[in-house]
Length: 69
Image (tube, rainbow, N blue to C red; front, side, top):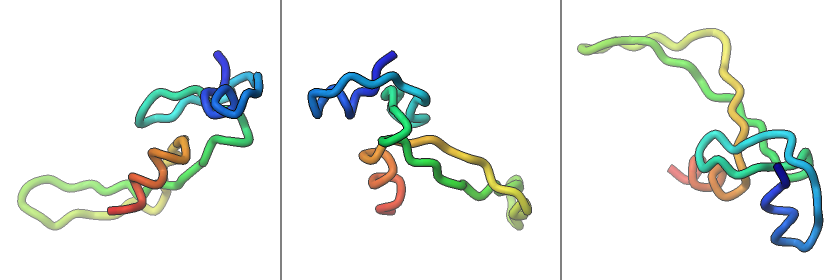
């Protein structure tokens, strides 16, 4: 699989990751690794935050959308 963002720039790079949100192939220069908090809890509250986080690989577009809200 090739990096989609590189293809838009006219480059040819192998993808090393896939965006967890949109499925876009990404190279090391375009992938964004984000740490996501893990919450546990049912209805009704309270929820409990876990000590460890979960890594999430995202493209810039999905990262911007994810962080905008």
